[in-house]
Length: 80
Ligand SMILES: [Zn+2]
Image (cartoon, rainbow, N blue to C red):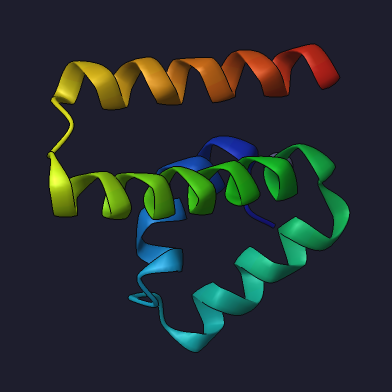
């Protein structure tokens, strides 16, 4: 079973479908039992979508992206 921090580390690869089918299976298994990571992935997808849209008109700086990620992480911690 993956740990939460492993899910967080691999969220990028997971969403970019760079994981092998076995890795994806483990990932999905973890998401099934872990509400925290489900929320994280959901927020992560949203962040990607937002940054894609932003990058078309006006690429966000690394600082902006980090601020957004920090905001989402804080939100997750509150709920947990
Ligand atoms: Zn988890």
